[in-house]
Amino acid sequence: MASPQSGPDILVSGPEEGARLSRRSIIALVAAAVIVLSGLVAWRLWPAPPPVFTLPDLQGVYAGMVRSDGTNDASVIDRDHVAEESGSVLPSACAPLFEATVLNRFPPAALDGVGTFWQLDRSAVSLFSYRFPDTAGAGREYARLARALGACRDTRVELRAGPAGAGVLSGTRQDAAQLGYVLAADGGTKLAVHVLAFSNTVSWQFRYEPVPGPYVPLTAQRVMDSLADQMRAVQDLHR
Image (tube, rainbow, N blue to C red; front, side, top):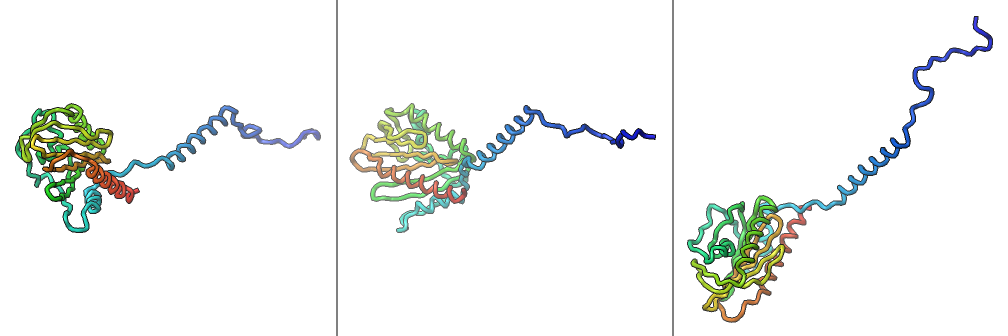
């Protein structure tokens, strides 16, 4: 018989109180939550890289570079239908500066491109952009041109191709996104080139000016600025 003072038997299957987290464990959990939350916030606020250009994107850019008076139109540049010019450039280190323009040579790493052409009195202006697989590929092409311009600035250059010419090459601009240079031939003709690197594209503006007087790059610079604005507008459509 049980003692009158004894209570009922209690079956205990676990600790008497729930397990308590240590102070160190609580701090670790709070820190982990803060890190995860900060990462999510940063991911939402961090700007996404701008999209690379497709061929239809580039065609859309050039639709904005076509004049309303019908004096020019835009066309796709395809590797299989580019007729390269025979000829050479001396010194050969300066050849990259005239490959895409005077020699009409398709950049080896390019996929395709779009271009347009204006005839302005006695001057002629070509504007065209080549599209590369990615931004890095376009950057390598631009860096190659920048190195050539650095080596050939203030150098006498001879073009053995049409339009042929020989004279001193002068630089008008060289920075991370744009290059400008002009070959003032002995007879007064000027061959001016402006280059723009933008996303996965490299663009050239080639001006043939058989007119006397010094070359003033202001008009050409405005064309390149307009092209860059068109490219930003097309990119914004994909954001």
